[in-house]
Figure 1: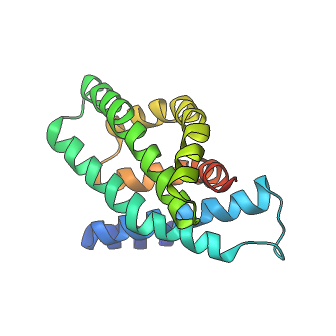
Figure 2: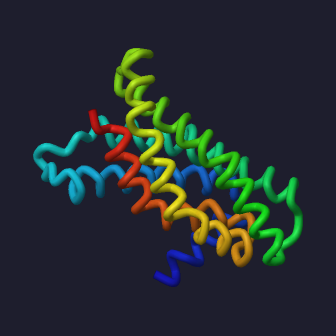
Length: 177
């Protein structure tokens, strides 16, 4: 395990953007597998591989680039590393980014699942509030710790590790018809 972590560190220092995006996509996929197998109890025979690939694609092309770029922008907008700065970053992250991100995530997932505009809008109206409330239970303490203790190039990975459980919830919520 230590060797794997060292390899990850080396790759992260050489190719931070690529590694962050690959990590995000992979862990969104892991979240979907957990959602299907543990939460939805589908079993291997009924596992929807196409759905897992869609969720991984969302991780690679939306979650990784958007969250990675957001952390860079946030570090630029609110420089420093003390407790006050960490709190300010968490307030911006949870007050500005989280609501927009969740709306986009749910909308993209609905679109990839073939929902019409009206169906997607109704699903968003049904699921968005619950997802945002769940977000506010989990993410503020994680983000304060993340912004205070974790260097910029590791923040997305820390978030994605915590997000395995969150991604399982989001995958279940986003794919529940």
